[in-house]
Length: 239
Ligand SMILES: [Mg+2]
View 1 (cartoon, protein in one colour):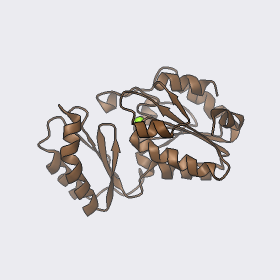
View 2 (cartoon, protein in one colour; view 1 turned 90 degrees about the horizontal axis):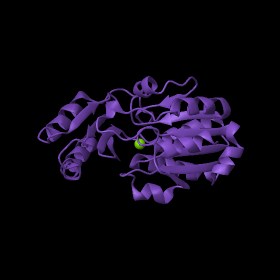
View 3 (tube, helix red, strand yellow; view 1 turned 120 degrees about the horizontal axis):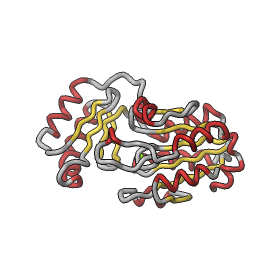
View 4 (cartoon, rainbow, N blue to C red; view 1 turned 30 degrees about the vertical axis):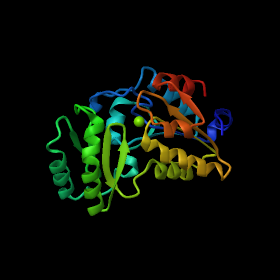
């Protein structure tokens, strides 16, 4: 489980990267997120040298492609559920009814999922506590999961997970090594997926990109930590 093993197998390696907080600094308004300087150049180099390079994100892939223009870069959006049918319209109506009284909450309808952002509320932790129960109840009624993240709760089809995305990419590409870098709670299943792959002899490296809100659980499971997107980029450049 090391970076050196992944490096030695780079031509057969799947490089899997989260976007927000991993390649881009966390921003208050999510549409203003941009990759750190140099990211496009480093990723373009890796597309040439590595087996595959994939962005694994809860966002729509179109947004990532609009801010990260790299030929040959794969982007898998919405936890792999981007092509799923849209959620029942009543789900959005019920979510809006639950959060309607919360100042600063932003509801983003992504068709196959609904993200409820609390970052711009006066007290994000208190807002999360108030809305988590009712949102979970809605999810249960419609057979959905609630995926937690930094200052966001996302209602998505059951089985939506970065773990499933990671397993699919590695199987499809026949990778002999897998590197995953992420910074959030929803990256933890991806770390677990890599651990399962290691049992099949695949070289793995799990990198936690540490920022102010990175959960301890993720750091505890990491093989390596880096202090923010810029430091991750330096590590990737040296592969
Ligand atoms: Mg992230």
